[in-house]
Length: 151
Image (cartoon, rainbow, N blue to C red; front, side):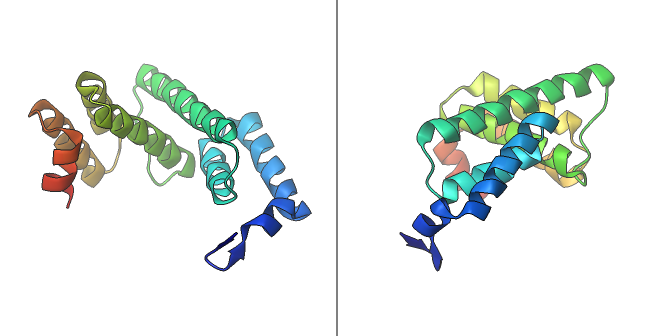
């Protein structure tokens, strides 16, 4: 299979690529690196890895990001989006919030957006998270939010 000029099947068999995947996975686990997790996820998606491998990475991203969020709340410290790990952490939390919203978990998604509003150091992102939370509280379904407020 060719994707954007890349031979995916050849890539799956490439020793250097496989070594890079293994190294990235070791880094993700050893350093509990969400940033490395997203890089690994991108590579696994590109080669169309097994669903259980993809799900395992997603589980790591969500679990680790919420562990970090808990630590930050205890420390009364926010996330600095100029730091790649903090940015990846916020991304994982946000994506989980969007998933919850799309599944109609209004309470859970609203809480996630509000927590991000209060823990992110970037004013544009803070404002965006408040818009997300307000849309949920106003009763917008996820599809309506996308259609009316995002586009």
